Image (tube, rainbow, N blue to C red; front, side, top):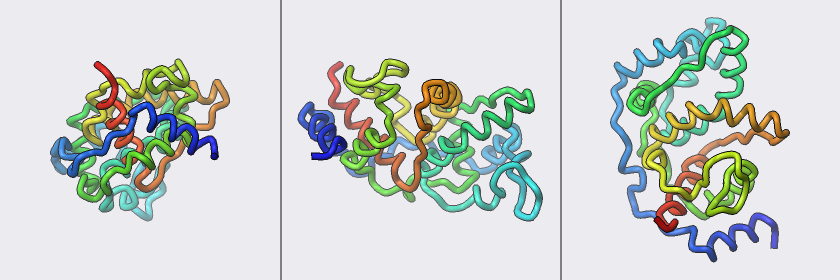
Length: 210
């Protein structure tokens, strides 16, 4: 049995997986595209992501503003943080803070919609947890790293993509720095990986004792 399957079996045996009900992302916060456009400008996103054909630091605005899932976008934001943090640090600019409500509006502006996310697959999510080496820094019911919080804790930021993305946006620069210091490869997410991961962590937190 491979290490991934071994750990998955242990997590299953520990009762860390519980099927999620249909409509798992029903708690999504509705956003407003007009307010999201203002957030896009005020948080300096517009300065790096220019319309196609104009030289910008980041991907063209049209590549960002496209139909996509909210957790898909959360994964893209996660991937984007280290490069953006380095660029802002070089400029001497502070890291922009984004609230949950602002993140919901920003998601609406870039056309990220919860119905576009497939239903989360917790079994695949726990494989993502292992393969992305999350447990090198975080623990799960006391097993794993001690740098970050235990991922089985009941957390309000698992409730929606906007809440998760806002929390991630605030804390990921520090996590990326710690990963670099410790020689841990910064994980990248694609497709439905982020949604599946949060689906598993939600089920783990539900199964976790109070």
